[in-house]
Image (cartoon, rainbow over all chains, first blue to last red; front, top):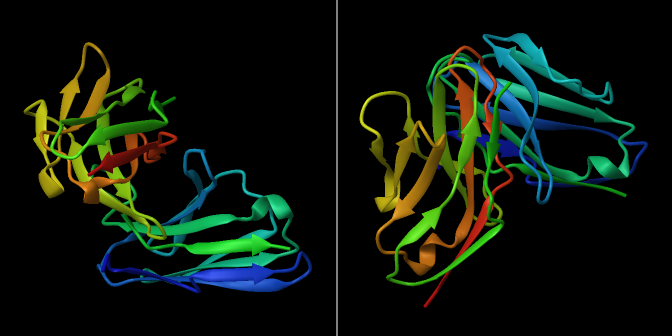
Length: 114
Length: 113
């Protein structure tokens, strides 16, 4: 148990669907992150939130829309995705978005675009 | 700019033998270095970090890593590998003045019985 819970664990959707990924952290952390993990590639940082404020949008296409209603919850809203968006999406949290504290990861959502 | 290189896609060792996973980094300031492990169908788990101080850092599950500033390396080591250590290992670096954590592409470790 990492203290970071992601749902759903698996998601299959068509290119015209709209779906949302959910992340919840029980660690009392102030920063939350979305990463994309594709096979044989380094993790790609997508978004960073600190105390519900977005501090980074790492050139992510607008078909991905994050939402952080409070410091414990993070969502990633998906619409009109492309086949190349199929990947493992990881949520992480840390005590602060700056400094040396490690990030704690959820188990991810495996997304498949038909 | 910061970057991490893991020169080996795959490392194979026999159980009981020493395990080393290599990592080199590039930062413009002072590095914060991390190792994570990922088991199948799971997220990344934090193993250890180097911020400052002793160059040899000890972490979870008997792993340790040695920071070498002159070689800009942070290799992960375990004196005696277990079959259960088979997993995907990621090295990561943060420039002390930056908030981004940059990951290597990962090294798959296979420990055979």
